[in-house]
Image (cartoon, rainbow, N blue to C red; front, side):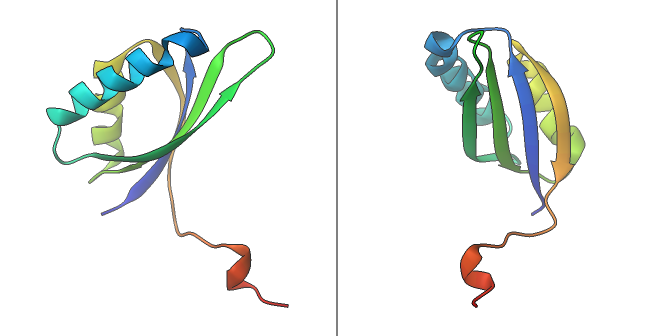
Length: 92
């Protein structure tokens, strides 16, 4: 299954993100073809929340359908992940 990284800019503050995440899970429950793997959350100095989320999905359109159903954010980008590496993959 392809993996995608989704960069989002949210219209809510950090304190509202648990509710947004629960809503994301509710939406995902209706979309069994998509799996939310994990997210990195960044809060800028103005309090705006940006996330970098990893999803497994059959295609980019499925990820976009989830984003549209979730609302409360702007998708800044969706990129298919070609692979993963760690420092351990490159020993000295």
